[in-house]
Length: 111
Image 1 (cartoon, rainbow, N blue to C red):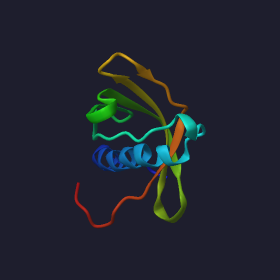
Image 2 (tube, helix red, strand yellow; image 1 turned 90 degrees about the horizontal axis):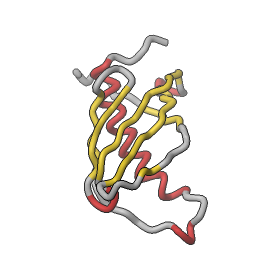
Image 3 (cartoon, rainbow, N blue to C red; image 1 turned 45 degrees about the vertical axis):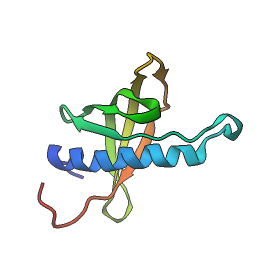
Image 4 (cartoon, rainbow, N blue to C red; image 1 turned 90 degrees about the vertical axis):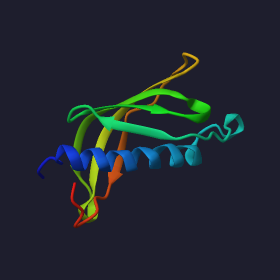
């Protein structure tokens, strides 16, 4: 499978990251210690494998994502193997396990 173009990966990953933050709270292991958070995330690719961005709201701060690899998914989707980096405005570092994010690219859209 050919690698995603830089522009398509940038658009696709922004959508994927928003899904990750929304969905991750639904599958938390320790529900007794979980609480809803609100805010917005915006990240941009600075090269073909790294993003930098910001978050507003309850977890405001800076974040980045390293794309460690990619593979073909089902029905034309792409699976990105990623690692997230996040530091809140209060200086807390949020840690995440490496993850795999599925992305389905739209057809007929110019980038």
